[in-house]
Figure 1 (cartoon, rainbow, N blue to C red):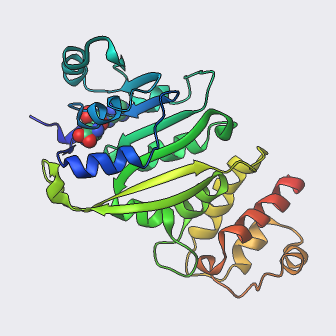
Figure 2 (figure 1 turned 30 degrees about the vertical axis):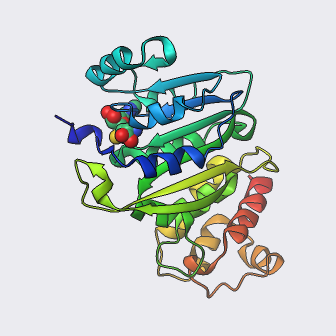
Amino acid sequence: MPKKSLGQNFLKSQDILSNIVNSGNISKKDIILEIGPGTGNLTEKILEKAPERFIVIEKDKKLSELLHKKFRGKIEIINKDILDCYNSFVFNKKVKVFGNLPYNISTKILISFLKIYNLKDKFEKFIFVFQKEVADRILAEENSKNYGRLSILTSLKMNSNKITDIDPKYFYPKPKVWSTLVTLSPKLDFEEMKSNQHLEHITNIFFSQRRKMIKKPMKQLFTEFEKVAKDLDLDLNLRPQNLSKNQYLDICKIFDVLN
Ligand code: SAH
């Protein structure tokens, strides 16, 4: 019986599974990490590409045992919660991460990876299936209703790409919502700075007052807010959702220098 509490919705369409695998361009030299392999549907497809190393992390003990039986020595199985071990892998090569993610914690998983120091040196690409509503928020641009913290935080370190929407009928059990396959690649020109924590703080201040003019959050963040606004060519009468991702990154950089 699939466990709802662990977000167990298994993919059963071979076409969709192939689409996910192909979105990762796996070569025989790759190190692959899969989050939540479940009964191993995606795992099996990835194995066909014969990556050099293949590690899977599955929280469900029963499913981990099933995977042991099914794949014997072909993959390394870690029976843990991804949120407890996402930052503990050390490899000599950048890793590709796959996952048809458990919906209840998919945003948490993404945010956790975003917080990893020097993400771009450790990870090559993330190939994730999110519930569509979360993917829409990740991919949104300014002046749209889904635009917000998740869009901005993701864009600090990643280029994201929508591959396709996935009908609930391709899963067992059938979820109530549509899903979306997204690839995320760490930005190679991103320099680690204090920005990480700062951008969370800044977007929190802006978006907790979504409908107010940005004058208020700017005032909260900077003593000389009018000068900062002028330097960045920001109209203080705008609303938070009107500022582009780059404008938030610019605000963040100034905040970095001052704090
Ligand atoms: N990849 C499989 C299953 C996806 S369902 C397929 O596409 O068919 C999500 C899987 O994530 C389930 O197997 C669930 O047990 C596992 N899971 C849920 N929470 C987890 C966590 N915190 N850490 C690791 N795995 C988790």
